[in-house]
Image 1 (cartoon, rainbow, N blue to C red):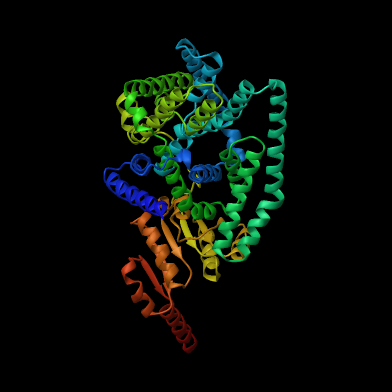
Image 2 (cartoon, rainbow, N blue to C red):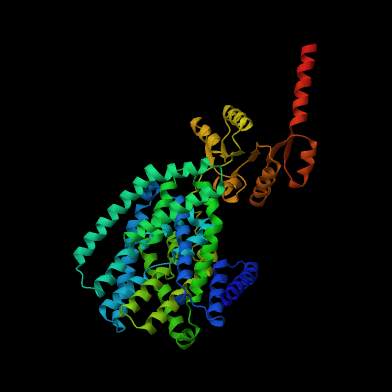
Length: 531
């Protein structure tokens, strides 16, 4: 019963803090981190004593990486090979070696210095990608470079964990390397086979049930299967989830999947940030306050300088600066590495606590840095550069047609003849497949969900046409459109004036009453016959 009160207290504190912080435009991550600190201090609930909380929080990162993967197909990864395999390798390699040498000069043994150095080279996938997703910068030039480097860092965690194993166990590096290479080949082979022969068909069967709950369950199964397969072969859960998302990136289900997962992803990420704050030992922080703050400032500054000089040789200085500052913090994987290193006696418990506090404080500082990133760059780089946005859908000045029923088909046919650009959203699998067969620009999704509308570039659309009759669905779609694009031109239809009156408060631009239109057409035909 006591745990129930702790949970209620944590939810209340998180709600109040985030309500207050959002008034000042602070990200919710900060509120969750401070909630974790308060709960740890006053309720004596610590994540180290809660394996369940730790596991649940990791699911947030898994879902985040899956939804990021939905935005990038394997073709996109080929395009980003420079960001991943050149910039990522240089960032991790140079930064890791620099910090390892520095730790060695400070008196750490070589093995300990190597672990500390390369752990400090990692950045926070959870915080950086969440904020870039929220503000739309994930598709900017610097956003793509941030994502590419973070992907390489996720890959770099694998050899780092293997190094700890080599340092603490009686195994040869060559046997570890061969085993890892075999596991990598096996992982991608299994994932590609599952994607081609199982996943797509499995989701199709789920959609055929016309039950959103079943579709959501099937999606979760695909995500966690890929994550567990990755973990079983020695890689991180998040890496498996990312590649599972990439498998579905070419699918027309991607927008609906992303819309369904968004609430779960954000809630679980909140638990992750709560667990980050929960790890802070205030007594240890206060005791070593000067050292911790000095390390936070020095490490973030050094990381930013190294990455800036890596990028500025071949990229715009403004882009290099924004990328470097975005990745200056230390990542969540470093926390796990320091705990593991401490358990294997590579570093002392005190050192682990100080380094963990440095990691967490750098993560707390990150949302404030990213929030002011543009204004800082504007002050330092005066050249009038407008950074290119690489949009997920790429639609502009188009018409969004909601529904591919008989009326939707006729509208699409007419729009095509008149040369208008349009895109269709359909939630019925049979109608969706009919649209695919007719080579329509159609996507499977629920038009009432905001993420689906955002993915189809609603803000750039010239009009939204709602073709179905259901009043409740018309209300939901209209409200979502109005929230995202208040000035959008919406066209909808109703059966009679009674239904029109029911929708009067929805501010629909053009409301077509079917009975009136039909009666006018029939009278026109009668007059024509009489003449």
